[in-house]
Image 1 (cartoon, rainbow, N blue to C red):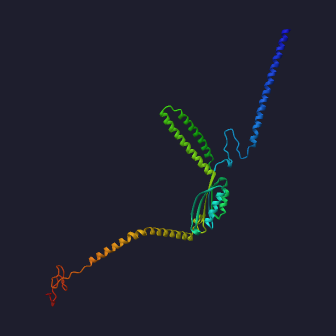
Image 2 (image 1 turned 90 degrees about the vertical axis):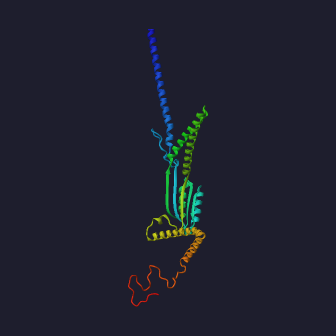
Length: 326
């Protein structure tokens, strides 16, 4: 009886221990589930707070950021404006660029009264590109406008990755150079280090160039006078347009001809006049030799052989009553 009771007590104890282990397992599982759910709840708010313009991330990889303020874009524009006073409007265009925080990259002008032309290359910050373009368009009558954009975001990211990789290669080459034991290894490592540093410098120069183009936009503005020909005038056809073009070509040709004549005239005066006088004197001297005194035959001398006497015909009979020469 006692053994049966002991066995029963042992069986009850084992069952209680198993029940406790099962309860502990359930508690740990629920705790892990709660921790997972709490972690998911903690991670959910950033996804909810993410802006509409920021792309979501998928399981296959991170999508490219499509926000404009996070992209590298090169803006270039060109304007052709007809104005009354080219010089005054050119100063206003330069002032507009400097007020926007930019500068003048190029300045070419041709002053010819109403036919004057000024071509300015302005560099302005990218965020002030469109306001400056609108301000320049109000300087006069806009004849032409062209705006181009180039997205270099992918190229910039690629350059950043290549620069980081190349810097790591340069650092590894420097470490190997410090551990070189022989002269041959030292020379080869120095050459390799120089090549890697040159590649790194080239990549960094490209990155600076892209950074300059994206930070400062380029605006080419052409200011023409009231009588200057514009792009629209060049596209027109007709008799008057052809006549005007021909007259301009004629004036340009005459200008070239007069310029050449002015360049040649000093040479003609220094060398041409003496040579002309020498040629004239030599020609006159030759004429004097050719017009010398004529020879006169003596009276009674027989005529030269082969010459017929006046009044006679070679081989003809004498005329009756004609008197021969004594």
